[in-house]
Length: 234
Image 1 (cartoon, one colour):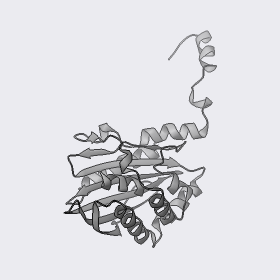
Image 2 (cartoon, rainbow, N blue to C red; image 1 turned 180 degrees about the vertical axis):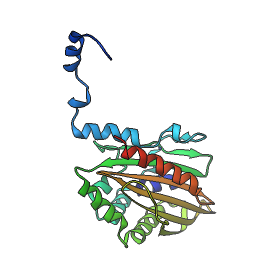
Image 3 (cartoon, rainbow, N blue to C red; image 1 turned 45 degrees about the vertical axis):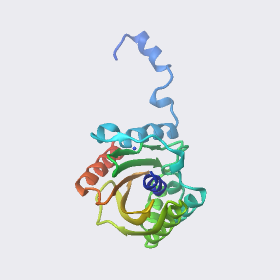
Image 4 (cartoon, rainbow, N blue to C red; image 1 turned 30 degrees about the vertical axis):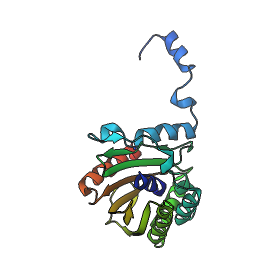
């Protein structure tokens, strides 16, 4: 989740009896898949797609935008290295999915990720970790350190605050990180919002960022509601 924000800143039959008997032995029905595989399939249905974001384009992946190992470790520590928090947004998550990064012009970017725990208690523990009082201060510190690794970024300051109460899924909490810096000698201000959502044993994040002005609240709410609705669906 926060790693994604760093990347953004540095640039989501019917038949007869014989036929029925044949169908019941065929592979690739939902009853033949493991729970991990079913979770991964649902995760793909949950994350944001082009249909959710008319007028946006998909950003090509750029290895130069990846978070450093040190930065990733610091960001994970903000969530007390909670297993689902660490797993969220990882490319090799066997039971999760991450959307492409979508952008509108040069100033707005949107993405999302989802993963599943083994049980609901595990997902609740993740929400406890990201709702803890020290979380925003830790996130500010980790983002500041990571951005300062790029010599093009100078005079970096990051302030993270909790967003007003978010109603989505079984639990939700949101944060806004305001980044002020000089990039290539030009003063810029970034606003990056992350909303964490729990529905049952699923955890998702919706990440929106913008330059110069905050991302529109109504649009952010629409995207969060879409993701939460899919999480709650069968």
